[in-house]
Amino acid sequence: MIRWLIVVFIALMVINAFTPWFKKLGLGRLPGDLRFTLFGREFFLPLTTTILLSALASLMSKLI
Image (tube, rainbow, N blue to C red; front, side):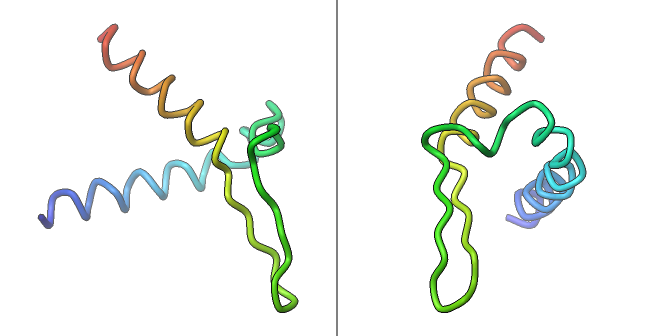
């Protein structure tokens, strides 16, 4: 269990580091990515971007 927690934490750190680069590529602004404001706070749910990056990671794992 602790290994998965560490892996998720490292994955989130890597994704956070590459976020500006993803925005330059247009990820985060795809048609299925949701942005909404609730109680004065902005929330962002990148559904399409998550599916696209997951498919890319899956393809890379199959090739390696």
